[in-house]
Image (cartoon, rainbow, N blue to C red; front, side, top):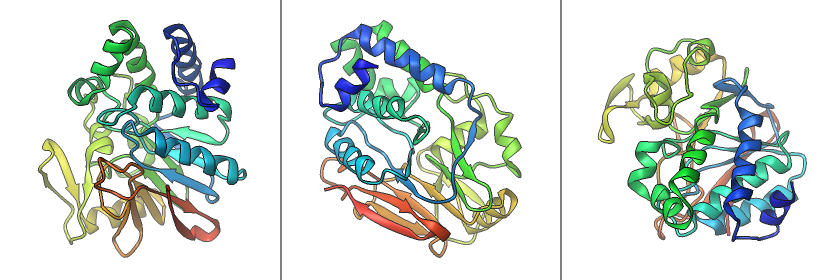
Length: 280
């Protein structure tokens, strides 16, 4: 665990053997978790897309020390696009390993081989280290759970509501253990987007298999899964957090995205009281 503490203390240049050791520990921690992991109903801080922005992670670390009674749910998209992709992924891993009972890492659409090869993480890892290490990261990505739930209260994931799901068990029985997302339900949890209109599902400009979900799908899904609030990430909004469906869905973005967004996290206290916290 020395490497974990050294990274949390600011060490940026980590050798391949140390990274492999962390990846192995994290795989052991997550491989037996289910697709949907149960979380507490309050004292939660949700972290949205980070996209290789180490400054955002450092601010999350500050909150991690401040809110010692809170659990932190990371909603995915740790690398790709940003200036410090490897360092960001490594620091998030270190946080998860330092206090696994307080930190949960979920899988975003960028935690896949197809996307990482297009948007930078593959290039950074193979340039600085090796193709073999990149594959080790992929092995870690594929064991990350897809969603989190607090029965009666909250559902959280990276993207959104998938089609053809009427219960948590419909998600639990899917196979997420792949470097990409061959399962339609797993794919849509990572990729789908909300639209504040009265429809169920519609086409999405992100791609042929991606859906937008509307109010009717949201109301049906939250009723079937017995939750009141949904938290997700995946979309860049200038204000960092945007609400949908009369404030029952929060979309969180925690990176600046080259100056396009004001990064935020979302705190959920008792009785589903919410607080938007700037990362500044």
